[in-house]
Image 1 (cartoon, rainbow, N blue to C red):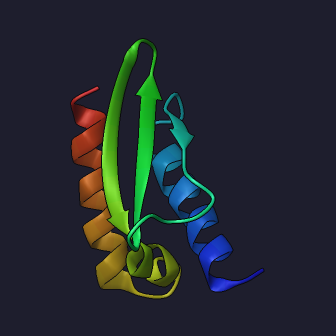
Image 2: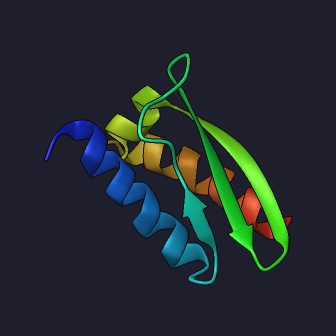
Image 3: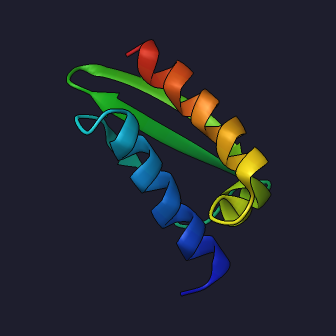
Length: 79
């Protein structure tokens, strides 16, 4: 598994740890080095953008994990 796939898997695990009821749709490839990710719970949907580098560094960098976790928690909080 390459860095990007590892990062995507870690992102999915992160979302499930915050709220297992949230569905995630993540594109296969980034657009302009950004992933536009859809978080859905019930009829509510929220889009977040996460840089490709952050996804790749997610499994290994604690500061990136903390930053992305905050973005995910904030987004899920608005659902």
